[in-house]
Amino acid sequence: MKAMRRVNSGKVIGSRRGRAFFYNDACFVAKSVLGDFLVFRKGNSRLIGRIVETEAYLGLKDDASHGFLGKKTFRNKVLYEKGGLIYVYSIYGIYYCFNVVVSMKESPQSVFIRALEPIEGIEAMREKRNRAKDLTNGPCRWTMAFGIDKSFSGKDIISGEIFILKGRKKEFNIVKAPRVGIDYASDSKDKPWRYYIEGSRWVSKRK
DNA sequence: ACATGGATGCTT
DNA sequence: AGCATCCATGTC
Image 1 (cartoon, helix red, strand yellow):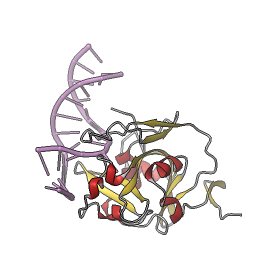
Image 2 (spheres, chains in turn brown, red, orange; image 1 turned 60 degrees about the vertical axis):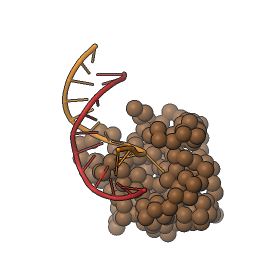
Image 3 (cartoon, helix red, strand yellow; image 1 turned 90 degrees about the vertical axis):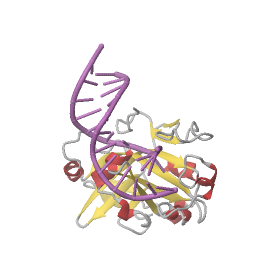
Image 4 (tube, helix red, strand yellow; image 1 turned 135 degrees about the horizontal axis):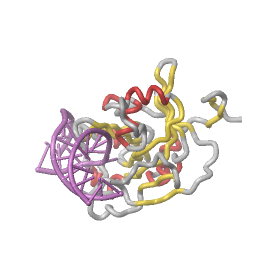
């Protein structure tokens, strides 16, 4: 029997995703983590969200990816590390976007976590979000609720305080759609590399 | 419901 | 200059 973890008064939600999982390609990981649980352990308490929306960024050949054609800067250099590291960058001055690096070293693929369903630590998330109504249904909303900032970039999602637990069952349909907010792209702009759980009310609202 | 514009600073 | 966004405020 695999090691299981208990959260929410005994509800079993699964085993931890390990390194090998994140060595897969971006589309596979982006689809597979839907229904998984993102856990952030801080001292006694923890924040947990169920992943309901992701996007795959394919790296070298994806002109929407920060790793397109091997572009490497101080900001994105973690993309070239092994799968399982966290890539956070700031945007519009005030927000943070959270990605997980996937695939092998030197292949700058990543999975962008766009939305979560709040599971545990909801009061703490609310406090972080002030008076905002929408807690975690958007890429920069959930990072605000979790208190994610740039200092998390480069950390390991395998061994750190942030990790992913495999969802026990995946009884839902996955919708594929074009990615959001990449008008600057050309060839890959309309590729269906956004994935979300059909019917989830926590999926980000488009426009 | 939909449209617009400001916030705010890092990156190139 | 532009950004893998959010929120408040305006109009219908």
